[in-house]
Length: 581
Image (cartoon, rainbow, N blue to C red; front, side, top):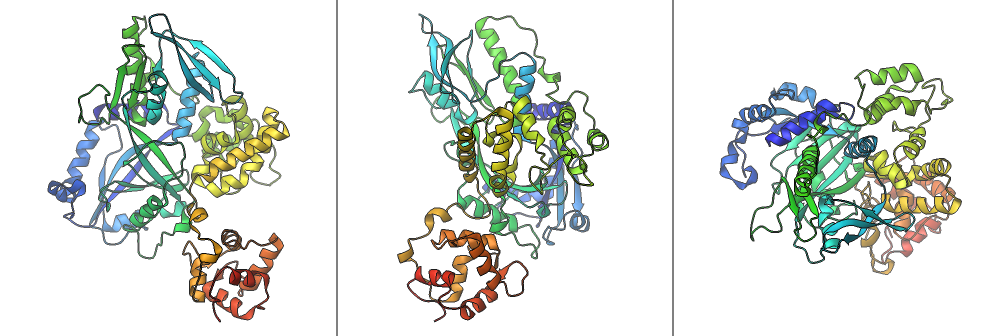
């Protein structure tokens, strides 16, 4: 814990363009918690001792973080109006926050600035050895071209996170596992579910896991950790996890604030590597710290475990081990003071400078400053007139988000973006924030990247198809399971209009908009022949012309519309019973 606090301070102090402190509120609804957290009676007294515990937690970082403090009922309601009124007090403490994909990109770019050869979409497919069986290189494949090539090396380190064992199996197919993956599921809700700049932590969920409710990138991120399971590349979480998060989130929110399934803008799962030493005796505990081990046959070193905040310490430790193992000469580690890409010269007023010099909006300026640091000036130099009175420069990639079209060109030329998926998941975070918005803007991104990288029509088409497939694996407002759990037409039936309405209103919002109607009609096997047909049908249903169809309006439409209406007849043909007759 002390090491993690030290590394947290280094990351936050060196890189304010990528990181920030976020206050996290822990509501206490009772003075004694039962059933107790972690299923231990001692923890039932958490509400009484928690303020002292958090001051001790502050001390572990040498009080380098903002101080933890208490908020009692009235102040808590002012700061967090979304909270349930039934709270005794709220404990507030501070943690570091960052855009993880952005930090990872900046680490790679910083390494390149220091002379490292950084490659993208390159996979290790084999190990090269000398006559004594010692590894002296690897065989790689460029997954974009399919070409293979060899790289010679004095030392080799495997550091694949939750996929480290997959790398080790290239070396030794029957190696003992060193990684036990734990999945963290996250959903993204609209920003109004959390007040600006403050999060919430539930330490006593129904199954004992922690639940975080955090402001992130202008939205609300709800997440949990430690669901055991093998690591997979598919980001889409199980639907049952999304429902569990929604149910748990409701516990601390005011009764008049409804958390709906349709409010989920995106959902994904990530995997954390919990490390175990493959040479340890059976039953040895899994480590939440990192583990470094060396294969005595090949002298390949691997490192796994740890967490984001200790990435720098992990790198230092494993390089020190290799230097010692190989008898290499190296000076002391310098990364403790190395500012990451874009951080040199950064100030908190940088976003204001961008507004003044380039005429971009304040929202976009803040995004650029917190994403690119001082390189935001380079991005803004590419901007073109917006055609608006304000902001004067910077065409948005998509309305409602601060991303600019020129960020695509910049990422292609300066940040090794190779695919449409790169841009929508890791250079911008749009797929993680709003999967449907990412799907909508994917064709525009493909056009912009084709111009920047000189793609052919066939390559642009392939890139777009791959991106749509990748983004579709994220969760969203509608359950992914809906695509596979609907029964064939001849086995479905409803007995009345209420049942039919519930079938149409799958998200239980209480209404349908036009996109809902088109989507549901398609999933039920009765798609509209054209957008014009969908619009005509929707307008007939929408009696009060407010852009949504309530259940009562649907019932009136069912009874009033001609029985030979194409959509009504198509719905009837899908069910054994004829509703409303």
